[in-house]
Length: 269
Image (tube, rainbow, N blue to C red):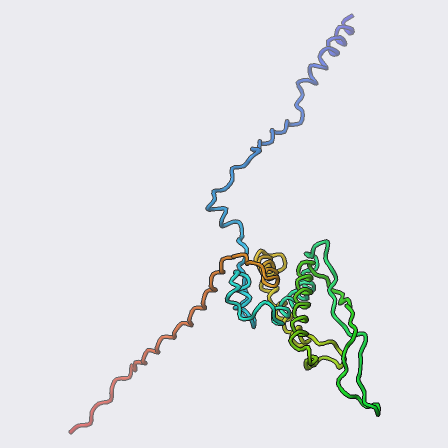
C-alpha cells in the first residue's frame, strides 16, 4: 500500500518538475523599423546626388561651333546649314555614335549606307582613245554595317539630296570633277573621304567628353538635328567655364649665406 502511494506521488510530481525545468532562452523581439524613414534635408540631398556633367567640346577642332550647336546659338555658327560642312558633321556624328553607343539606338534603327557607282560611262574618240573623264551613270546604296537613329539618317539623306540638286543646278553645263582622293568613275561627292574621316574622329572625341546617354550629349544631338533640318533651336544654358589652372608657386629667393668665420685682422699701419 505504501509503495503504491509513493508511485502515485511520483507520477503526479513529474509533470510539475518538467514545467519548472529551465528551457532555452526566449529570443528578444526584433527592433521595429519605421516603414517610412525621414528624408534628408534638401541641402544635404544636393550634395549626395551627383549632378550631370556639363557639355564639353574643349580641345576639339570645332569646339566653338559645337558649343553653339549645344546652346542653340545657330546664328553664330561659322558655316551655313546647307553646306558640305554640315553634312560632314552630321555624317561623322552618325558614324561615331553607331560605333560607340549601339546599345542606345532606338528599336527602329536604320542601316547606314554609302553611295557607290555601279555603271560608268566613257566617251571615246574615233580611234578608241578616251575623249574625257569617266562619268558615273548609275549609283546604288551599299550598307556599311552601321546603324543610326532614323531621324538623324533621314536628315543626312535629305541634306545630301539638297546639296546634290544645288550642285547640279549650278554646274549644269559642266559636270563636277571628282574631288582629290576619290577613285575615277566614282559619283561626284559632296564630302571627301578625308573630310568624313576627320569629322568622324572629332565626333568620336566628343563622345569621350560627353558619354553615351548623358544629358549633355542628348541635348547636343537634338540641336544638331534641329540645325540640319533648319528648325528653331532648343536653348540650353552655356556650361560654366572650366577653372583655369593655378599658377605655379614662385620659389622664394635663396637666403644669402652668413659666414661664421670672424673677419681677418687688419694689418698694422
